[in-house]
Structures are given as C-alpha cells and as structure tokens.
Length: 466
Image 1 (cartoon, rainbow, N blue to C red):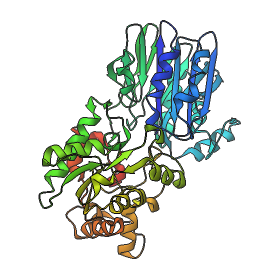
Image 2 (image 1 turned 60 degrees about the horizontal axis):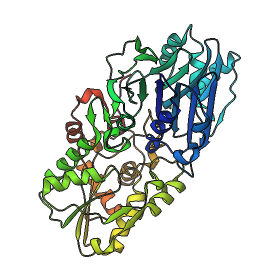
Image 3 (image 1 turned 60 degrees about the vertical axis):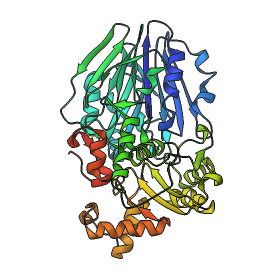
Image 4 (image 1 turned 135 degrees about the vertical axis):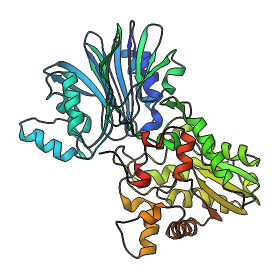
C-alpha cells in the first residue's frame, strides 16, 4: 500500500511536508512525490526504487514554497497527479487498489476523456481517480461519485486553493489520521509521522468521511459511514511500530500476538527466541516475555536502506533484498534450538531460502517457525500486496494435497480440521523446519482488540462486505 501525507500551515510547510512524507517510506518502493501550493503549484516526482525518498527529495523541497502541500510514497504509480479541472487546478495523491480499473478507464474513454499518464499496468490509477472526481458537480460530489464507482479501495488527499480535502475509503481498509500543531493541521496514513513534527493526533478519519483542512482549521464535509473494515495486516506487518490505527498501537498488538503464540507452545523446549527483522521483532519480544526464554538476535538486518522484501513488484527484486538484508550471527545460532517469530508466510520462498537455510548453515539445532497470523489464502483486493493465488504457499500446499486447484477450501480454513493439519505439515516439510504453528484468526483478532466485524480479514478467510 502507498502512504500519503498532507500539511496546511500558517507559514511555509515544505520542511514538515518533506519529513512527514519520508515517515511513510516503509509503505512503498517505487515512486515518491510532493506537491506544494503557494503562488502556484510546484510538483516533483522521483523514482525511489533504487534509493530512499530522503536522498531524492532533500534538495527539491528547499526550492519549493507554499503553506500547504501533499506527499506520497507510492507502491506502483507516479504521483501526485496535477489536473486543471472545472473546479480549478488541483493535485491529488491516493492509496489503495482498484479492481475495476480497466472498466472505469473504458467508460471514461468512451465519453471522450483522455489520459496523459502511463503506468506499468496501463493507466495511472491516481489520474483515473482524479478524472472520476472531475465528473462530479463539485469536489465533494465528485469524491462521493468516485467512491460509488470503484471496486476496491481508495483513500486520498486533494490539494486545492480551498485547502486539502482528505477522504478515507468507504470501508476503511486504508487508514487516515488528522494531527494538529501550534499553527498547522496535517493528515497522514501513519500517526508515526506526527510525533517528531510537533503534531498531535486529534482525529481518526472514519470510513467514507470527507474533511477539509485549511488555515482556519478542520471542517467535516461528509460524515463517515457505519461500515469499518480496516486492514488487520496493518498491525501484523504493514504498519510502523509507533503508529496507531483506530487508537490501537502496532507494537503493543505485535507483542500480544507473540504472547498468544507462546501460550500455545507448551509442548516444545527452546534455547532462544528470535524475530525476523524488522516486523517480526515485536512478535518475538512478546513470545519471549510470555515464555520466559531469552530474546536474542541470530539474524540482523543490514541498515534500513534495504527496505522490505514484501513490497517490490518483482519477485527477482524481492528475493535479492531478502538475500542481502539479513546477516546471520553464527556465534548465537550454533547449537541452539531457536523459535523464529515471523509476521506472516506469504510465498514461503524467502523464509525458506534466506532465513531458515541461513540458520541451518550456521548450525542451528532446531528451527521452530511461528507466524503471527493465519495462512494467507486469498490475494488482497484492496491494497497492492499478493498478486495471485498461485503465489501463496498455503494454496500450493492445497494443490499438492488435492492433486489440483479447488474452489472450496473451507476445510483448510478450520485449524481443527485434518485437512488444515495436513496443509501445515506440507508447508513445514517444504520449509525444512522442525515445527510450524500459525496464529489463529481468533487469537489475532483478540490481540488487535477491535471487534471482529471492524477488521478486514479477507486475505485469511475470503470474506468482505459488499
């Protein structure tokens, strides 16, 4: 998923915009962008696939001037998009995923509406969203109409002479939070962005809600709806440890997940507890606190610059990052029975080739893997993450056990069923680990602490609101 940040200040906002956007670098790997409105719009987009946002934009922001601006760390498309619309010129950034992108594009093309931006997958999704909004009677009406047309999710920030319009997608899959400072208002995907910028959380934007922030403050333009299906994976993996969503902190949830895993492990004895850096660390800390076993670091990550191996679009890039970023410490590994806490197992190839094998090669006596969420069964429909069913190791296990692809996988979703146990055993053997035990959905939901109906669990159970 992408990360977006917007700021309106009584003075120049560019420095805060630069750092606030940079605090979203864990959410995307492809493009970064900023747009500022002063006397006129000033926009910059850079490719950050081989370097960090900060290094690419450090000189740019010094030459931008204005009291309101938006920024983005994008997982796929070049952003922000500029549009000289019937509502006046505006810039827009977005986070989410449109399942019906081609259908919407064809509809607009048939009406004589052209597209100028080209993306790797065809039309730039953020430009498509901008053109859909431009079909409305005004900006608010346009956003609402866009919400009604898309299949998937979209949260956005729209920079206009009126201020910054912020809208969270109707089911709330992607978060937006409002912060306030002495002379500024901000909107962000991550509350992490506020702590060091003298901003405090004042509001979590509700699903479907549309607000406007400007020099005068915050105005609610449309109230939010009742449906809330925020992505549970934010707490398990995607989100930054210092962030909170709906008032629930990420690091605390991960520690609780680790504790849940440890409580189910009364039948094994280990020497040390470890976590796969970075997102597995807090899960491991929770496991160590609950089990009383020492937390140690047999695998360390070489600098944050290597980023995440889950988010890049290509498998080749993901594998390269996974191979290079984790360095084993033989002196800690050798001869020990190790619990390895991981946020999740998606494809399984990186865990097998670049984590388990490294531990085995350094002389680990036993390797017990504990993912902090259930087996992933369905490609995400709402954010850019897993792309196909074939990528998921659990689905590969089912296909191997059944001898073919099957549509009805209900028995494999039940952790008490024999088919589920056979699936886990297949994955265990494939990974080459001593034992494998996944978190259950019930324990994961309990660790998050929100009502089950307020969480999107689609990638685990295939269910979502219509």
